[in-house]
Length: 156
Image (cartoon, rainbow, N blue to C red):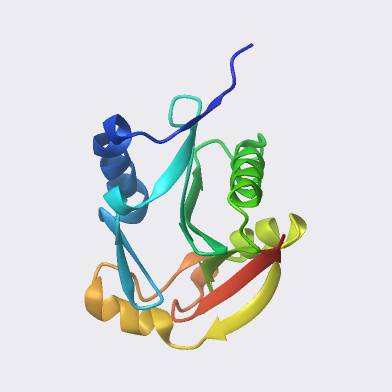
């Protein structure tokens, strides 16, 4: 049986751009006042793009930039998280962290069930990000006003 996970390559970047356009509404993501372009990240792809995780390693920190599973509840997200944790340990990172939005209750639960802890609340960060990316909606999932970033981390 083949490994369903493979590393994102330069050849995958056009498809990653299209994937981000479909999932995130742009070919960039705004997080902690930074614009992160689709071609600046590393990542892993599950099977034929059923799931994608992107990340950046800087020094001893690995930041998950995006995680998308097109078929939830099948272990795709967990497999991709495990791949990142292995990569981060191999690269001698001391922590893996990410930003979730205040409305994304599903993601907040998902990451906490996998050992991540809430470490910071960045009040108004999404309101500021909307100045850079006006397509970010005012109302988020679960009919919750979309305005804050919540940082989660897992210490390795």
